[in-house]
Image (cartoon, rainbow, N blue to C red):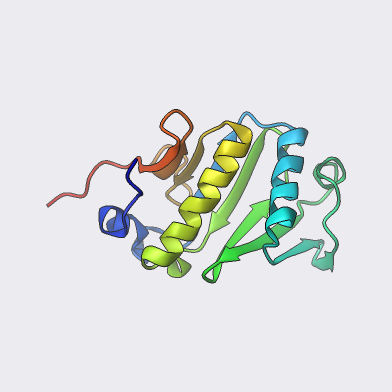
Length: 157
C-alpha cells in the first residue's frame, strides 16, 4: 500500500485554504478518548494540558470530558507538528493542526502516522477537513484500506 506522498497533497496544505484544518473521529466513546490519551502517554509525545488557561496534569478521559469548560490538550508527535485536541464531547474526538507546520514530506509523514495510530487503535476513520467546512474532507485514514488517503478531488491541472 503506497504512502500518501507530499506531491499528491501539497495543494491541500496551502495556508490560503485556512490555517487550522479540523480533524475528527466520529462515533467515539469515553473509552476511545482514554485509549487515545494512553497512546499519547505510551509514545512519550510531549504534551500540555490546559483548562481555564491553567496548565495541569492530564486527567482520565472521564474526568476530562465532564469538565464545565473545554480543556485543551496540545500534543507534539514529532517534526514540530502540534495537534490541539478539544476535549468537549465523548462522541467525537476532534483536534486542529496548523497548516504552517505541515509543509513538506516529514511533517506529512508524522501527521499520517498519527492518523494511522489513532485509526487503527479505534478501528475508525480519521478525517481532516478544511477549516470550518466539515463537509469538505482533505485527507483521512481509511480503516478498510488501512492507510491515509487523499479525500479531496484531485487538483485542477
